Image 1 (tube, rainbow, N blue to C red):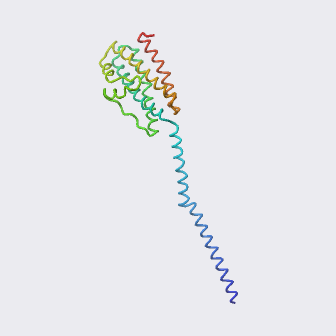
Image 2 (cartoon, rainbow, N blue to C red):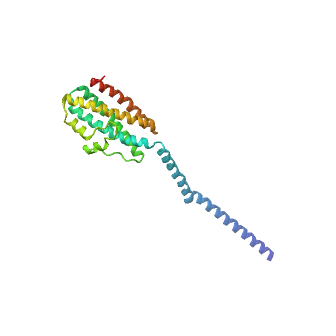
Image 3 (cartoon, rainbow, N blue to C red):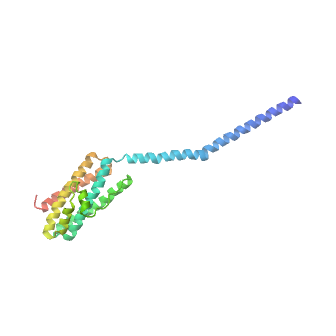
Length: 215
């Protein structure tokens, strides 16, 4: 009887140990699919957006940022000049050209602003007053505050000549900036916009020189 009891006791202990092992295994399985598993999943999912953001950041470089920021300011001044021409020009041909310039460059300003925002960069603030124009006059082809004041005060045929002369210089500056982007830029849409600027504004320079009697 004693031996029988000892055997029974050993059997009971074995069953208990086996049950404990099953419980631990179940707990381990639950932790993989429960909070522990979720944490690992979160870590993996977090790495996805980070990698994507890094890849996105690598799609552009400093040249793209500089081009966008400077060309926004450059385009804004061209639009200001075009709006003046809509009111002051005496020639319908000049007014039509001004409408074309504004129609092309307004959407490009919005496009470049959206790029800067997506890159986490600040969009340049609107210029106002002669001082702000002077601060940006270091860019190729930009008119100074004094130039803009003269244009605002001109009228009739004098305005037409002044506008065309200034806009030729302005366009030449834009082409120079765009060619820099073509050479140094990395972001495909930005280099494509630079291509468009060179093509469109080179054609408009020829048109304006012809209107000025220079070709």
